[in-house]
Length: 90
Length: 454
Image (tube, rainbow over all chains, first blue to last red; front, side):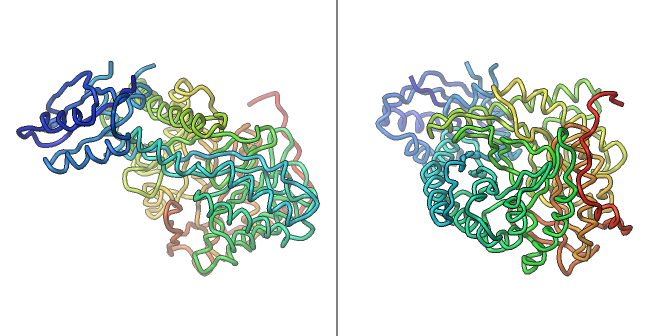
């Protein structure tokens, strides 16, 4: 399993999760966990996904997700899980 | 499992607090490139660097994209060139030819610096060491990506005062040959005491002879992250302050550790060390001076600054050591003047003097760094400042250095511009009393006693 973390930050609006999930389904990226909260007035969503069966390269996923984010006015990032594990777990 | 607050914290560090990995530096040994024929040696150096480091820049960029943390610099450190060129260089110009080869290799692989146009002369100079040192002004003036360093002393050997005297002149000559760009050649020239073999940071990086054929060393950064973390504990006790710095340093260093391991694996080169550093840049919010002010001194250089810096430096190490499997290099907070907006402001406001900076170098990483001084400062005075700094390192068993820029044609009240990461700086006043008779003595200062510590 190759886990990545997708984060969505921005102004809350209709269809954010739908848009992101549709994109992930098309790319054959499996969602393992979703959580969301409002931080300092902004919509924050985090998804843990498994990209091992992804039909697209990591770079493509990163840039296409950015475009999806631009189209709905939020910021979407996709990073490997290791960076968060390293920083927050001993 | 990772939670949303942790993810948000990491991303805030990158997006708002200037968290980055300052440098991935690949050490490459050039010892096997030595030989009696200069053009053969140059060919071998070029081939070895361009083959080992051909994927260094692209690998760094790839890792940065995947983890979402910028890796600012990709660099190379090499065996001190005075050793590599000893058999084939008979004039300073021969060494300059090697330097041009290094520049060509740097441009080919796309790194922003190669460090190691260096000589280690802490006890004495060989004829080839001296030739290399004498070639430095010309070598730096005809290249842009090469860094040079000279180690003039150590705790074990004492200080080579003949080298110190020579380096005062070399700094002046380098300033003169690069006067069109505010003597910027001197920004790539540093004089060290107790130089480490595995330093990833410029200008003092070289790969010592104790190191393997190739190695990956990583320098971390993140003064902005520490500053923001401390904003949340204003007015709290020293205990809370220190714990906050330690925890933050741990997190910053873990990023470096991850990057180092990934880079080593992908490049097929062993991982060497993480340099636990707080390395500032001229960007707003990326300043070590700002941390000192957040700790509670009005401006960097005010009374209390040395103690605040000592505390900061020690906590960064304590937090960082546990975050990394191997620690080395310079490890500590850097206090370059021109590369830190808070230091620039403090110097311009008159809060920070060279003498106070000298005291600060006793308790943190390295030394008098990126300090612009009047262009008419005498060579012997520069040697005197170098000797003072080397003495601090020698006696305190730490690395110290002097990277001074006597800006030709400028004096106190003027401002020097070096560009990019090198930044800009006000010209700082230098004590006007001389030290010629001291510097003109021959020989070396003996190694200090290692007992009866007081």
